[in-house]
Structures are given as structure tokens and as C-alpha cells.
Length: 67
Image 1 (cartoon, rainbow, N blue to C red):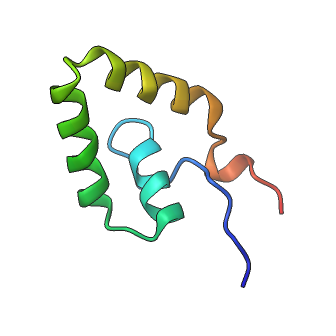
Image 2 (image 1 turned 60 degrees about the horizontal axis):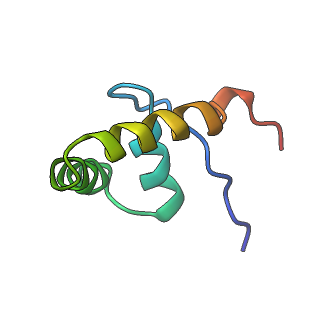
């Protein structure tokens, strides 16, 4: 079984971070987006926003990955 790489998805709402995490984990995209929203609200917004921005910078785009 080959393990897929963690990349931002083409299925974007903003930057494709949540969709990329959902594809990598094999979860539903809506579930990951809802979990991210709950995390952001419960952490007063700043840590969730900071984490999203860091992942946006660190995760490569789906087209930039060469296998």
C-alpha cells in the first residue's frame, strides 16, 4: 500500500488546506472543515488562523508534487 503525500487540494474553498488534510486522512472534506471551524472558534480564532496560514505556506500545492 502506497502512502499519499500531504498536499493542498485542487478542491479549494480558500487554499485547499482542509481538503488536502481530508484527502490525506481519507475523511470527508466537510467533516475536516467543520472540525477546523470548531477548533478555531473554541481557541478564540487566533491559533486556528495561525495554524491554517502555516499549513498554507508549508504544504505544497497538488501540481507542485513530483512522484
